[in-house]
Structure formats: structure tokens, C-alpha cells
Length: 257
Ligand SMILES: Nc1ncnc2c1ncn2[C@@H]1O[C@H](COP(=O)(O)OP(=O)(O)OP(=O)(O)O)[C@@H](O)[C@H]1O
Ligand SMILES: [Mg+2]
Image (tube, rainbow, N blue to C red; front, side, top):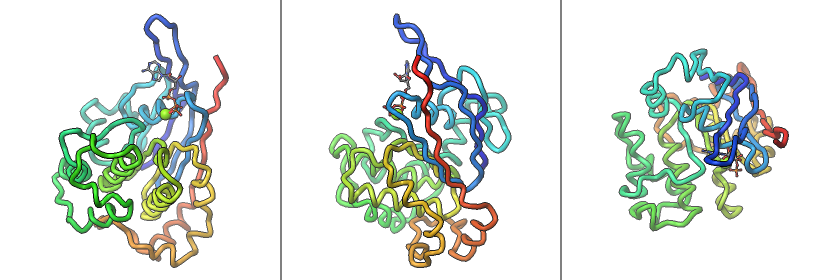
């Protein structure tokens, strides 16, 4: 899926406190199979941008295109919801798990909404990888902040979207867990999907160099989904040759008001 933003701006009206320009004419194009990091200081509008790209927040001006169709013009609200249920996976910055479901139920529910049955082993692999197996029967209110982030990520990964969007996926994590999260996101990208992360974690940059694509051991790292579209190493390398690496960073550094 190709994602395009054209001069996207967002101004919030604050109750009794004037206006806040959160985004000012942001434009970029992400080809299919991109890995994109969005950085920028706190309050620069990163989460606002993700909310706009995922169809949750209409921009004040400017347009977003998904595969050439305008997200807030050609798509209806219902179709935007469907898009999030099918093709876009969004790991939000704040609380997003359903409180009355266990960790396990939270993780499988996006797939079940799609009418798919998720094999237990598939979930087990990702739970183990992210080191959250022991809390699978707990409820969101019973787990730590770092565990919460990893459960949210597991849910987004299992959703198996064409574009995976994660807002600060390594915040609240110790270095060991953060490195697992980076690896898992890189593996996901290597299956041919697009990944967009908002992050302050500089290590994302260093991890995504061209070298890793030539590293057979790295690519042999088993995939964790039962995705029938999973590309094996050779096909993947071929594909990368065709589409290029597509690694990019967008820095939101708008002028002070
Ligand atoms: N619903 C809202 N109403 C009013 N102002 C808002 C609203 N949402 C965000 N803002 C303001 O818009 C600006 C951008 O917010 P946003 O959450 O996108 O920042 P961010 O770059 O994600 O920051 P952080 O790194 O702290 O998560 C902030 O100044 C914030 O206070
Ligand atoms: Mg934010």
C-alpha cells in the first residue's frame, strides 16, 4: 500500500486557550515496503500525524492518500474503520487494550474480528519472543507499563496489517526488551510490509542498514506469523532489489508559534 500525505495541517482549538498548530503542511510519500521513522521533540505533532494517517483524525487542511484514494474524501467513515480492521495496524501511544479482555484475548481479537482463526502456536511464538507469555491470562490493569507496550505491539503484529504503525514502541522498556522490539519490527518489515514508527530511539536507525539484507542468518530468523504471503528469503531479496530499501526518516521540527 502506498501512503501519501500532501500538505497536511492540523490546528486544535483549545478550550479558552486559543489555537494550537500541531502540524503545519507535512508532505511525504511512502512506497509499499517502506520502513519510516518519524522523530521530533515532544509536542511536535507526531501522534497527531499518526492519528491522521490511520483515519482517526481529519486534518484541518491537506490530504492523505492510500493507494491513490483520498482517506478523508473517497473513503467513508465506515470504510476508514474497515481499513484499520484490515490493512492498517496502529499501536497507539496511550491505552488501547480492552480492559475486560485478558492479554491473550486482546492479542487475538483483531484477527477474530476479521473472521480468522489464529493458531495457538502462532500466538505462543510472538508471546515468547516478546517475553510476555507469563502474563497472557492477566488483565490489562494487572500488568506493568512496559508489558502493556509489548502486548499492544503483539496485538498489532498478529493483526498482520500491510502497514504497521507504532507510536514509540520502545518507550518504557529496558534495553534488552527494546532490542527485541526493534528486531521484531525489522523482521515484520522484512516480510514485505511497511512499518512506520514514531521514536526517539536512535538504535532504530543503526539497525536498518543494507547489510542486514545480505545476512542470511538474520533473514533465517523464523517469521512469527502464519501469513501465507510471507516471502521466503530469496523472494524477499528479489523483491528488495525491485523496490529498494525505502528507509527514511521524517523529522517534525515545525517553527515555534
Ligand atoms: N485534542 C487536542 N486538543 C488540543 N491540543 C491538542 C490535542 N491533541 C494534541 N494537542 C496538542 O498538539 C500538539 C501535538 O501533540 P502530539 O500529541 O501530536 O505531540 P507528539 O509529538 O506526539 O508529542 P510526544 O512526543 O510528547 O508524544 C501538542 O502541543 C498537544 O498539546
Ligand atoms: Mg506522541
